[in-house]
Length: 169
Image (cartoon, rainbow, N blue to C red; front, side, top):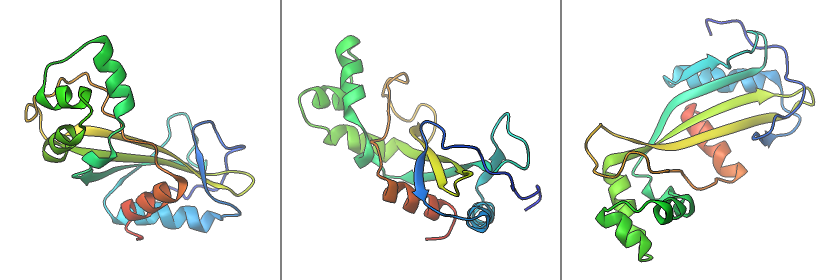
């Protein structure tokens, strides 16, 4: 790693973070960060943190054909307030999510960003940030302001996705 290794744990588990491991170590955090860099991911310091703080943001991992993971509840609330005409959205309002999933599989990918940290209690924690992004601008005719969010992932799922992003699974 070009930057100094993080050696100062954060005080507590911040809101929005999930615990991936108890009684972890700095070497586990260092392996994750080194694996992410070797896999070509962007490893960056969290804004406002000192270089020695044991928290980093890992970005640049995407899952293609991830339409299955769409969370339709916020999308349905949005469509109730401001209806947008699109065949996949009309089908979703009628109770069929498959056309929307097919549209997402074709024109979108799921971008996975992780913020990982080690706490003073030696808990390895992570804040996942998953969102659908278009493969290329203008490919899809879905309205650009739709809340295309992924469903909530369990702790084991997030851990496996993090390990895959870092080339460790």
